[in-house]
Image 1 (cartoon, one colour):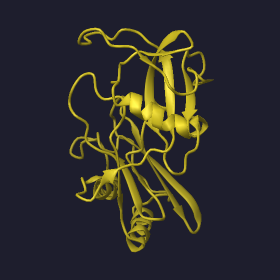
Image 2 (cartoon, rainbow, N blue to C red; image 1 turned 90 degrees about the vertical axis):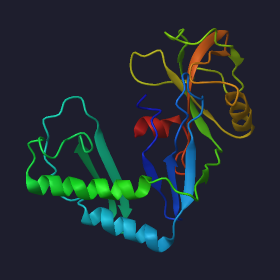
Image 3 (cartoon, one colour; image 1 turned 120 degrees about the vertical axis):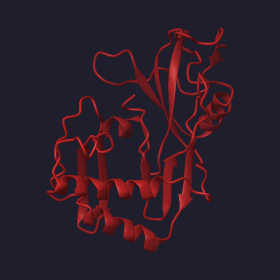
Amino acid sequence: MLAGRFPVVSVYGDGRVITEGPVVAIYPGPALPNIQVRRISSAEVDSLVERATAAGVGAATDFGQPPVSDAPSTRITVLTDGGTKTTEVYALNEANAAASGLTEQQNAARAKLRDLIDSLTVPATNAETYPVTALAAIASPWVAADGAPGKQPEIAWPGPQLPGTAVGSGLDTGCVTVTGADTAKVLTAAAKANAITPWSSGGKRWTVMLRPLLPDESSCADLQAS
């Protein structure tokens, strides 16, 4: 799940803003995530960089450590003229300002980051489907899912043989990079599949998480590195 997760939002210097759009609330869900792209101006890109640095990204800002269990951390990375700046904040959205044990200054610093993220994730009317030219396929042995509706039809995997390069230590999970002509084949097959479809490859069945690669990603190694 960590290797296949998609960033909440990715903004590129050419103005592309890439996010994961809404997904139909059914089980099992679709095999492919709904990745959308919209464009903003170069001036808006510069403004976002300024807003991010003003909100404390890359600085020694005190965001506090709220007493919240099992919450994720939000990592914001910005490429500036002075290099890459990164800030990671624990429980950014989960901590309740009124009962979090945070100071007024810490809550204010967190609010700036939330406002920055919210401004980038509001559904846009000009968003289009992200053109997938390459993707990572993260495969693990298929196991029938509890509560699955009926028998799941098996689909022959049309890409590089699964499971590929090992993901994690001690896990029977691998990842293959799908590029070129294989990309279209996998996308066509995925349109007939769902999130728990058994994919057959190498004489075995696999559960496959399909993760479209972003413009700055080229292989499974990029996902593992992040």
